[in-house]
Image (cartoon, rainbow, N blue to C red; front, top):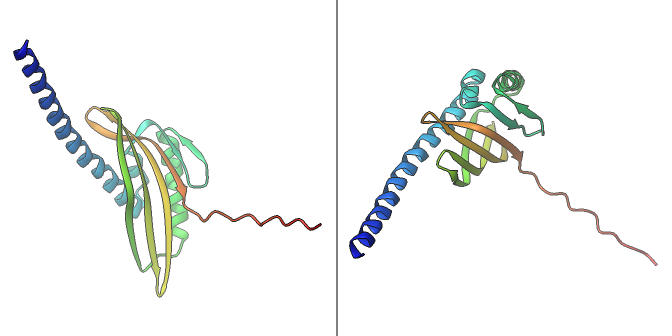
Amino acid sequence: MKPLKGTLIALLIFSFFSAKAQTDLDNKIIKEVYTQAMKAIESQDAKGLTNLFSETATHITPIGDIVRGKQALLNNYVEVFKMFAQMPKPDRFTSEVLNQENRYLTPELLLSTYTQKDTYFFGAEKKIEEMAHVVLLVKKNDKWLIESLSLTPKVEMPIPPTNTVKN
């Protein structure tokens, strides 16, 4: 009985380290997906950005639109980048990922949540935008793709007026 127990412990230890190595590799690949997405956005490459999504992907935009499917995503990003082209360009731009958490739901399905803080500099003026991201990534043929992306602007909650009742 003892050799079987030792074998089971050895298998558990081996599987733990194998899973850890796989997770480290996946995390590296997932980080590359984010890097590619940022490069595509910065260069306004709608096709490059869309290629990071699965065929059945869904994107909930910051204004609440729901875009479904790769072709609809491509059309949406073409229009978004046309809008971006009309906007003033900052002199400088920085982006920071805050409080990121990656959680494997299955070995082929990962939920990533984080806040992206972007700072734009226009001369002496500085504008800060924060956006909460919820990203569901799916692993297909050893490649991680975005299955669902939801972007929510972080805004100050309005404070409702205090109701004062006069007698």
